[in-house]
Image (tube, rainbow, N blue to C red; front, side, top):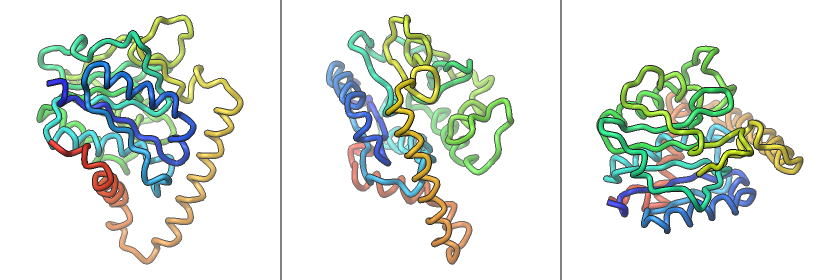
Length: 243
């Protein structure tokens, strides 16, 4: 079933150039275990801006619905180390979603492993459908889908907490499998922080410009931008739904 396991990452809005080294580590990991690999790097600029992180959920759902047995999503800024084991090492009977907690002691969706099951599809759909709903303050991370993932993961019996080594966001001394330079302690470089500030600024300007130009459209069409971008990516990368 190795060929039915997909390693997926999304790197748009300049991240495809900033994190080339990390993306190569994803490909090496997939090749090592015979997994299918796909890094989504087009369209080069997403109309979703920084909210393009929601695409991880819609693309994972599409891949599972197409027949992939397992999908491992990796944020573009995650480095997969050579010691990272086969995914089958963490599989448990009756468990379909696997995540580790980050430095805030809440689930971090930068490494998200999903197994094909009706419960998985229902959970993904539930989170996606709530994209415009406000989450509780204790789950909020400020932007993106992670707050919704945290909120909808509480007391869900088929979700497993992975060891920190699968998504290490803060411990430099840990012998980890995947090291994640997200917005926490691991991202300390001046150039890296400056790049992210630029991306956030440009994404906000792009979003404001897009909203101004879409005023003539209906609210329903405007809110469907996530679906439209998902379909565009699926047309560019048929491997994501080839099964």
